[in-house]
Amino acid sequence: MMNDSKEFKGRIDWVTTLVPFGIVLALAVIFMLMPEQSKIFVDTVRGFLGDTCGLYYAVFGVGVLITTLYIAFSKYGKIRLGNLEKPLYGNFSWGTMIFTSTMAADILFYSLCEWALYGGEPHVMEMQGGMQVWAPTYTLFHWGPIAWCFYVILAVAFGFMIHVRKRDRQRFSEACRPLLGSRVDGGWGRVIDIIAIFSIVCATATTFSLATPLLSKAISSLTGLADGVGLTIMILLLICAVYTLAVFFGMKGISKLASYCSYLFFALLFYFLFLGGETRYILETGFQSIGNMVQNFVGMSTHIDPLRETSFAQNWTIYYWAYWIAWCCATPFFIAIISKGRTIKNMILGTYGWGLAGTFMSFIILGNYGLAQQLKHGVDVVGAVSADMYTGILSIFETLPLPWVALVLLVITMIAFYSTTLDGITYVASSYSYKNISAEQEPSRKVRTFWSLMLIVFPIALLFAENSLYSLQSVTIIAAFPVVILSVLITVSFFKDAKKYLE
Image 1 (cartoon, rainbow, N blue to C red):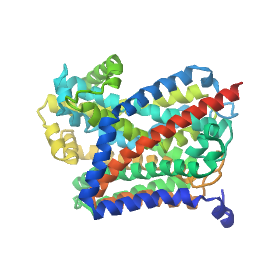
Image 2 (image 1 turned 30 degrees about the horizontal axis):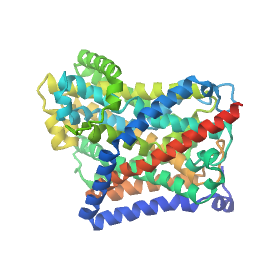
Image 3 (image 1 turned 90 degrees about the vertical axis):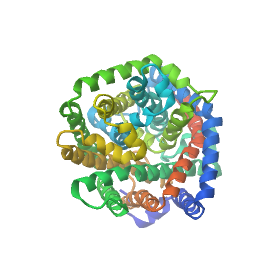
Image 4 (image 1 turned 135 degrees about the vertical axis):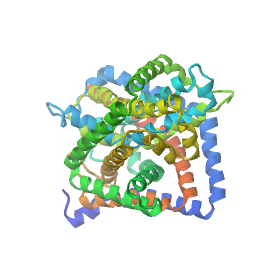
């Protein structure tokens, strides 16, 4: 630990740490002062990137997936990350940390409602099988291999950089050094790192601000407390307290919390699968959806809708690829750090395996239960979700036996998942604040606490301005555009450096 005050001050890169927050704060103020003008502007830019440059994201997604599989089964896959005889963490601990510290919080939320968001889409309804076949298929596709490949490719590059090359700067810019050389120590490096941190802050703020209202409504339903901003703030502060405590204890604390999260997650899935009365339908629909996705994966991955007959690809697929790209600035470092002792092949296939297993279980069980209520029992979940997403989700819980038990499980699990997701992000962001820090060192508790507080302050602030939230969400998607370029630079740098290492 780094306790010396002078050493602490000398090691912190204040520009990289504070400038992204300043940019986000300035944007939030502009959005609040000029809501209509700013909304029009960001919508125009976002629309241009999604509509005109959609092929840019689609090609990148397919290309990255192919690249990760090539790396896994090539000579590069045999490279061991570090000099340990066995991995730093066992398979279960490692796998649960990957799942719970990446997309788990979002996965749990969208598992409950995403199929319903597709339910009214003309593209889905016009296809053979309609909602029954394609709504659950598209949920698996949009949260499937391509979503995870953005994390995997960067985790490979960062893992090689940290554990094999032993570089002591855990940053995007440092991963570009084999290609850009000493330029990463100057202005170019600053720009790269500021873009990365900016994406992390935006993605974190918008995700929390969008999902916590569900927690607020659920707690309000259970306790009778008034559903409003005050309750939402209390929830965010509780999440902050939990993940700050875990981060305070370092990687051991994060590992423990991840394990507890997995047990809560399995309990919630068990409740829906075996107590909801739709076990056969859930499993059969899930099996069918996986088969349908595998059979049509190439077509779904390359569907761009050139004539814009429904714009489904632009509104959903391209949107999601951009969203995952913006999010991938944080968690790959975490995956890389906890993968010490594993081969690159093991890390790639393991990340896909654990990530997709958790994702698919969640969407199949939680999503298909709601779909059963829509198609078999006449509950208008699609209509309820389109009117109010959060109320629509709660209407699904009302169909369960003892719905309050399921709601309690949901609340506890979501709080735990959001805490573990922020654990990983906080740990990575804290390392970003240092000019130099090795993989064996943990960021100071002061820095971890700073990031813990800052990453929760912005979601709280955004609760008071819905226009700001929407606009910042759009900015997050826009930020993905340069992140694609950075990811390409990092990938090329990895191949260059790894080839040199193997010679």
